[in-house]
Image (cartoon, rainbow, N blue to C red; front, side):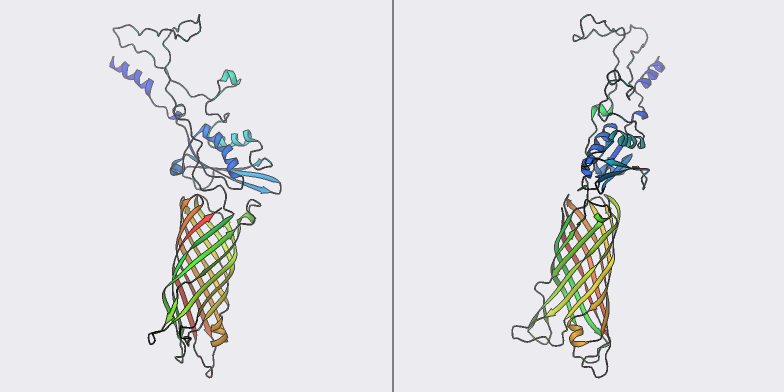
Length: 440
């Protein structure tokens, strides 16, 4: 008797793994009209699978990505499906988009193929399928399990329930107990159409960065023959800075959209020079100006790497002025490094946090007063590095914390009769940057 009871209960309530609903995480689509196409895709995918938010993206069965591009007047979208645990997409295909770039040209075909790549049958896109009799075709239904009355022995079977008061007149009473159907997960909690919280579906057209650099400077000569020149050392040079990045071709050709024009300026505040033998101080200033072009070879995603090449021009100068008594600090050479700038920048995104590193070479074109007044035959080279993190605060705002160092090395060609004789000089700026970055 007990064995029959256990078998009946097991057949009734045994879970079925086949009923588990696949989970999907839809990453924001790239491109100017990416969000519109993403919404259309999300409506269909989230009706067939359970969509999860960014915090559970790593545990989703599938991730879906898209990129809307434009070639002339034609719009295209490339859809990708990556199974859990895989680094590369298992399925990728390009489909046509309407002339305004906001809708799929053939949504049934494109989305049917997308669902097929996820192991799901193409549906109508509705969360609740229409009955097969009304749709005129066989619909995908979840199997149901009826709770059959148990014969525990020694008693009568439970009586059939009375007809419902709402039943139509003349309807026959059921000859067997009504079936009890276990509610599916989709019925109890409809899938959410909310997708992962990427700040935007495309790269910003304009990025403005405002912050402050706090730097040290150590300028010194090597093999100085006559003590008629002074080095310079500063422990805390405060330099407010402003940078601007523009994407002039954003929303156009996919490769041109990766080009950025950038420029920046930083200048010191409150800097003064002094010597131990005198009570007088002299005002001093440091100025840095940049301009150039950045080309993304690998565009950063919500997670994963990014790579870009940088090229441009750098002007970095140091100068000192007159003290209150009208005197100048003799032997302190001003510098005006003008240089080309060429290098690479890498990044790795971990959702809201992005680690960044940048390295550039600075072949010198001139050194300003150092060359014009002290060492006419001067050559030199510079190197620069930066490493830090960007932390997303809002969809359009992030905080950058980074360390940086810039070094200039110069070599002098002199003769024994020159008033200033040295083999070369080393000039190192190093410190940290804190800045806010706003993208639009």
